[in-house]
Image (cartoon, helix red, strand yellow):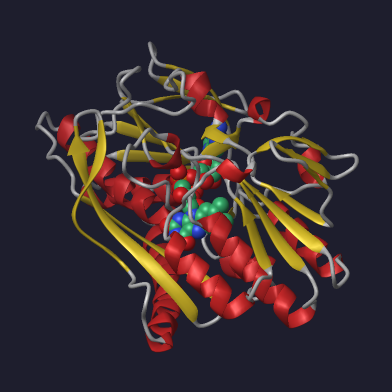
Length: 393
Ligand code: FAD
């Protein structure tokens, strides 16, 4: 009989992995389980918040995957039985597997931020999963009076897409500069330094003057609790009551990973970086934001590369061959205003228990003509077209 691989989560990792498995070996039975009929992409959702793009441009379905022979099931996985090798979906059906791939993304670590939960996110949106939250934050910005303050609470690493909070601060500043120029952006940060910091800070000065103020960890910027009823953000330094509060909470692997038993005390999933197989449960592979990747960033770009490498490893394992160690590439674009972008590209290989960055990476120069910034903003759009076509198209 043919082997069956079940993939949980149809985001950038799961969809890429399911498609790569089917393309590599057509006689495999590939089942993709994802509760949402339409996936909404986080990359470029900061543009939606800033009114530069509509949410529809972020949305993708699974018809093409289904047409290629991937069986797509519109349910959530609620339980996993590793001894029987079967997953249970929300409609009560049990599906057996030979190999299981989990790419469920993140959930929020509410216990680490007193006062914040799903109800609070309706007042103080995180907008760190794209969709309704993205639109809520946009509507709050649109409703704010000129002269208001928008606060962005930024968590410590590891977190999904570490540079994205600063891209968001930039694009919100762009919106305010063009519509409500007396307003401010306040970044309350649980970190001292961040990815591509010099590029961001130079762009902020150049484009937005002193509109963006950042309070770093060592200045007391870490948010310690919130109160949604009064829209108050409490930091180690003091209390803030901004007009718009975008609270990005601390994160961990999505809940189903914990149910599956593949998370450790960090809240993330330790894996063998050659096969992506869990260190804790056999025949279960974890890719994307949920895994403990070491030096590899939690980005759609790296996640997609992981999905393909995991597919290759599973094909080899099912055939009784030793998988080859992958060399993964990720590129991350940041857009700070229309026509002004920069990037960070990296290569990653297994080293011990994790991925380590290896030679060949590149970052945009800090001093560069606007022409290059314009070209990189265009490259960013092209990157989005390419990765979404590659994953869902
Ligand atoms: P996801 O893409 O989140 O997919 C997880 C899927 O699993 C979801 O569809 C979910 O519904 C499903 N799922 C969860 N639980 C279950 C369950 N129990 N049963 C079935 N399905 C389940 N990355 C870049 O490379 N470039 C960028 O420019 C970029 N910009 C970003 C901007 C923002 C504002 C944010 C927040 C992130 C950005 N990222 C970017 C990061 C990128 O979104 C993530 O790294 C990527 O989505 C991770 O893919 P994933 O497959 O791990 O998770």
